[in-house]
Image (cartoon, rainbow, N blue to C red; front, side, top):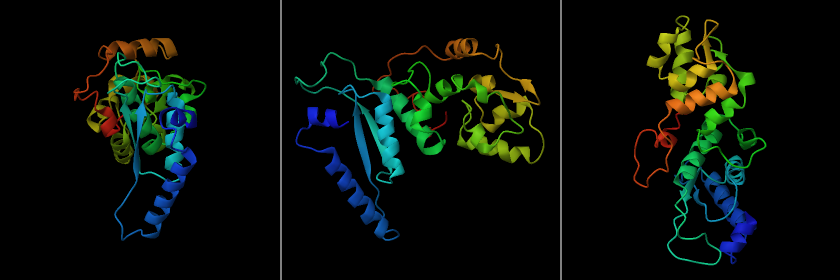
Amino acid sequence: SSNSLKLLAPDKEKSKIFESMKTGRDIISNKKGSLDTTMTTQMIVGATDDSDKKIMTLSENLYQKSFLKRVYYSAYIPVNEGKNLPATTIAPPLLREHRLYQTDWLLRFYGFSAEEIFRSKKNLDYALDPKTDWALHSLEHFPLEVNRASFKQLLRVPGIGIRSASKIVKARRVGKLRQEDLKPLGVVLKRARYFLQVGGKYLGSVRFDYEPIKASLQNRDRKLTQPSLFDYSNSFQEALTGEL
């Protein structure tokens, strides 16, 4: 935000940064085909009190204006002390960084907007990935019938990524899908089952309601901990693949 910029970098102005981005965008656009160049930026998360919604709304705006190809998010790691900086004893917000990357994928590849992801809240629920959290608060759109749902609808199901949604649509041209067909198509049933039905049969193992579904999902996931700087497990790297 402008206030955060004034706090940490008083010699910089947000409007001038955007002017430079616009100039760079126009240069790249005019030289399209002859200049293999894109622009990216990095946001330091946790150095100021900016909310997740403010951060992702800014990213969405930069993407929509074609200012940037990619936004990267880095947890604030203190290297010195300053009156305007958080205490050095605060652990780097790595889990928050991870959730922001996942939200970024939803904006760029899954057709979500920042407004619908956050609705009336300012920060993400770190106990759940943002797609699952959205689905739990949007049960009026579910359960989806696998054999009829559109590609865009399938993308909004937790546990169904771009590749698996494409495979589902392609497989349906051959014949109706059954529950046992979904896993080979790349569907992560431990999450997706609570938001799907096949042939009119609901796949969830609990009552179709917010509380029982949320409890079941959290029980199935591994115990939530603060990720390590060197955590390269599959679950922590979901944000790199975009499969949510």
